[in-house]
Length: 471
Image 1 (cartoon, rainbow, N blue to C red):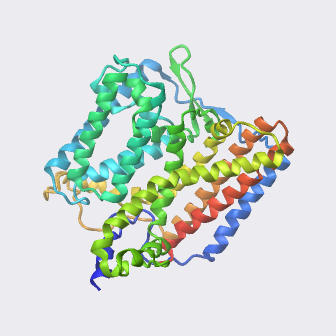
Image 2 (cartoon, rainbow, N blue to C red):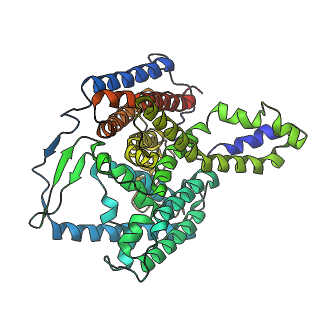
């Protein structure tokens, strides 16, 4: 009993991002949703192949008569916004150091993880890359500071990727409290300011900042495209969502690892809440842990627990390379079908953007409910930012549960989002195959293995999402 009770400590502290506590009754079985999504994905591939892969609708763009802004005015707005974001980060540090350690009552946890990181990513997905122009740390430097050191080409985007892996690991495994978050933000700020001072503000923003890399990926999916300044004016075009991914350059291996890790870490976070994941380790179905420790792991939980966290961390670090291997294998199968050989490094660079819609929609479906649950608490937290029992604006948290839409509607929205993301991935990958193969028929043959991979991703992704709903 003690071991079973101790295992409850393994449950994530913020699990309501995609878990609902009670089984949800849907109009039809979960399997039918999955099969319907798979059939819709296959149908979209057939339509693309039959139409030669070309679609005026998918490549359409619409010039918006608004907003048209003066470039100088817009730049001033961005500078003011950057100052506001920096002030918010400073508040997160101060409240973390001085306020309560209760994660639900200190404003810094909700402000940074939910509104700044999640909200910032989803905002970029709607309006484009706002973060590049409102980068908060640039307020501490000259915006066009070049830095005294030459940035090594071999270093590429590894700083941003490594720091992103570190941030995700902290969020998943440490269940950090407001004090730990404050120290993390101080460390993040020190690394950022050092990188900017050495290599220049823009260079570090492009290569070293993890949130800039994250928001850049989401921004490439946005339905708005900012046009170059003409006669001192800025305007935007309305385009199809995900269509700008065709212009995204992912030339460095670290960028590939970043995309694969964004995809795999989200899948890993969902998988670790399933019974299958729990049973593989703690039930010890193959008897390996019992053989190693002399007793069943559930009987000696305190002894085995450090090994469990090491196992989890190892799985997280290995997960992007598992996805990379799958991606490489199915690209290679496509080449073998058509018999037209290209360098695999070129194939990876050309087709990698087609995985971004999948990574983005997985992220949204797993975490967007946090904006509706914990994110809405910001109204109450601003009245008591330190968790000291204040009620500055008369909106302090009363203990009432946040508003959430019907769980069946959430599930339906998740199914639709995942299907849209995979259809976009099939379309993008097909466009690249057309460019490289030279004919619609060869492109369709080349993409058959990729279609199989997308079907597997769709089915597995929906299965993982469905597990918490089924209790």
